[in-house]
Image 1 (cartoon, rainbow, N blue to C red):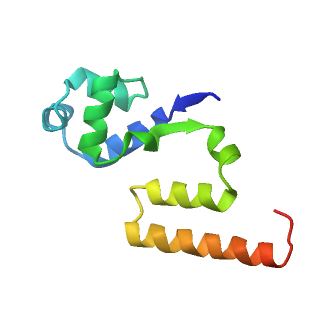
Image 2: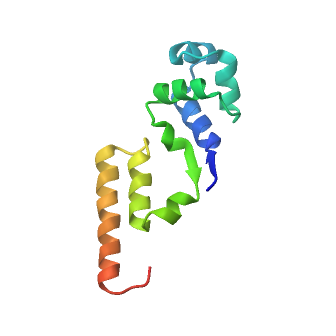
Length: 117
């Protein structure tokens, strides 16, 4: 299986959190160099320690940014959807859990009616 780092999502979340604040101010707050923050915002891959620092600053699990075909292949669809919803830091956790429950219930209903999935 091949994995990749979702750099677009990482840079988007950084830009969203940074807002109108300056690079230097945010880099100091996050605990990384201004040049590293600038590079990551432009979609370049950070080193591992900077990546972890940025995930901590964003309050997002590093696993949020890893992508690979194995997610859709190794988990049942409703479980994969629930996992994606629950790992999305843009969703309120209660809303993410409610949506996950709804998706699982919908799939159970489809299965009970013998709808091919």
